[in-house]
Length: 412
Image: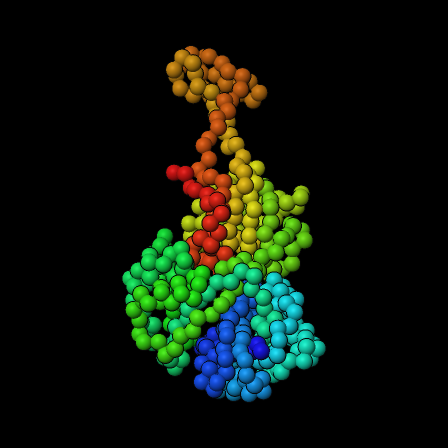
């Protein structure tokens, strides 16, 4: 069977993954055979999500009614039911439903009524609390398919603790150094920041992402921290680009995430706050893109684009703009500039002789009919560029996971 849980947390505390880890341990204590625990990320642009829009799916063998009772009991005991936006859902399915609802929740939007209809039609055990929105994630989790799978080791502390987390930063850098590229995004070396330790009021102590259970466990062995109260390794769709769908400018739905081939239409603009705007054209339709300040050095890549560059961009579409997650420079336009011609007599640059009259040297009166064209070197190469780990979304696939991807370079 598959047991799905969602929406037990709130901005002030708790974590659905923590409740899922406790339930997996409880099921094992009661004699259930737990064969897998999944952390399923859904559409990251959903406005009513708490943090990362994660749901949990536990694969187990045993009595379904008992598993359902245990799951509902933990929700009653631990979910932040007093919080206005916390609306848990629990689903227990004897077998995995078809994946259509999961893909819809991952790449688009699902309603509570649609979740109810799916639960009733498929004959699963289910329960929702309050407005029952958690049934969307719970049903999507049990319907999930993972053609590309990664893993995350999550360590937890006491949920009642609100003291600053005690995780030794140098030990996290050591873990990354010892296990990269088999694990990733524990730290951001370019910005010298530990990424895997949250700052939110939830029980997560730290999380290590990687390609296998053995690699994430090995990395966790390097980390020195306060003693975790429990830990769990999850199979997950994180780092897979599963949320990305092919798109065309002019045919985009707000809140979805797309991959679009386009041509740079204008020079990038650095705006107030350090955000960088980029206008691109796809099929005669202009599209605005943004690289926001938290993407740090990624903005320098965007600033080096010029009109005529062909790129493939990925990101979420919100309020008429693509929030860039990564780009591939497919081809670079020739960067030409016009400059006053040089005097052949060695007197430096000529000056304008007047509208339509060309140029002349003020010292020797030598004349030239037109400006000179100079080709400037491009300061980047074709290939993929991505935002740094501190700005990467859970679902975004880091380039380290795609050895065949050609990485672009900034040319100094």
